[in-house]
Length: 381
Ligand SMILES: [Zn+2]
Image (cartoon, rainbow, N blue to C red; front, top):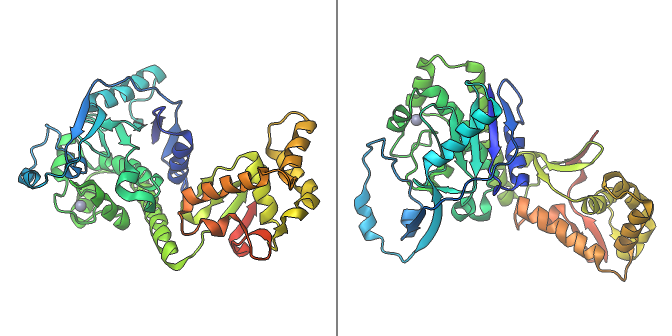
């Protein structure tokens, strides 16, 4: 099975790659194929959410008549005017259809658009009547979950869950009618209130009713198992993240390949995207658990230069020498700037409570060091 993932140009490549990493972690018969970015046509349509409640609420698309309790709305008069540009579902699925046509995509392949644009019914994702064209919303996640949740997890979860739904059901209407209005911690929970999605990701499972639907349909078991593995993996990462904050437990860190890219294994193989200079400095300190005095940094010039030369695209030796001289010069602020950027990148990935364990930090003894327990660190060629 091939799933083509289209990145709408507003969705950052780095985030897209991290989602892809999560999905590809357990390689099997489902192949996730990234595409070139696509620029979405502008939308003329705006939607104003008058209340916070409305903004957090998914709307029923007109094709399903599910009962909702709209009376509640009257009780919420919070001043929350929030205007947002929205795309129609038809527009979003249209992108997938055009992609199929232009790229000659096989009929049985799945095409999924990952987009930072909001949609008219305020859903995290959906598929069209063919059950092969999808969109997944990639924006607004931090509105719901703040920094407690890395948005890769819910996005990768949505990708896996929608493919599984396409195996369970024959039509959009059948799908909508099977949704649970009351949350059960099942993938088919409707989650009228969008923040409820966290519950289903924590359980990462199907309830017995839904399992029966899946069992009674002649689905490809190997592919179904793979999707469950992906969802279990996301759940594991999510739980690790929450538990690690409580227990101050750190993730394993792997440095991979010749380009020595840095990954946090227990956080869904999250890559810390360090640029060549940051990576060179990080590796130097990783290699010196005892710490290095700032004034002694110059003694490690050769090691630092070897790393930097390995990663940087600088063509000339002179430029490499200049960069390393600046970095090791005590009168230049360059080292502090690079360290601050490394800290900011770890903070973004592991949160404000733990980033100091992975970053290069000043010690009371006047050195700088990375505190992370080196038993958690592995170099893989
Ligand atoms: Zn269910």
